[in-house]
Length: 123
Image 1 (cartoon, helix red, strand yellow):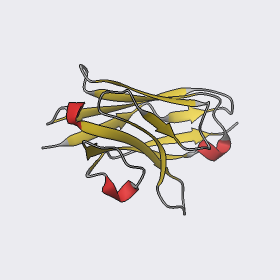
Image 2: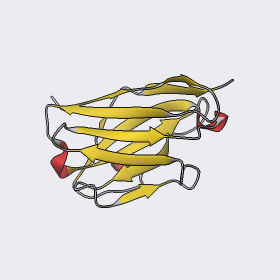
Image 3: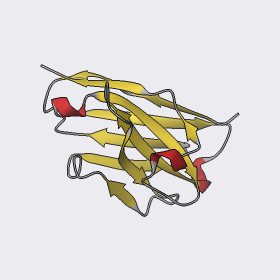
Image 4: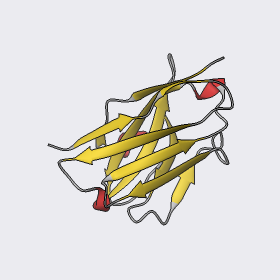
C-alpha cells in the first residue's frame, strides 16, 4: 500500500525554524515528483514547493521563496522541507503529495497524500 507520512510540525515563534519530513512506504520515491502543500482553516489547499524525481529541479510559491528549502534523499525514501524565518501566516496543516513522474503545481494532479502535520507560528 502506497503511503506517505509527514512529521516535524509543531508550535514555533515567529522567526523560528522547522524541518518537515515526508517518508514513503510501499513504494520508492525515485519515480515521483513530491510536492508540499498547506491548508489553513477556511482556505483551499495551496502549493508550497515541489521537487523533481532527481532533485535537480525545484519550485517555490512566491510567499515562501528565500525562506523554505525543499530537498530529497531517495536512498532514505524521504523528502524534506526546511522552513526558516517562519511567519504567523505560515500557520497551516502541511501535506506532502506524490505525483508520478513529472511535476505539476496543480494540487489535484497528485495521487497519493499523507495525513498532514500541523505547523503553528505564534508568539
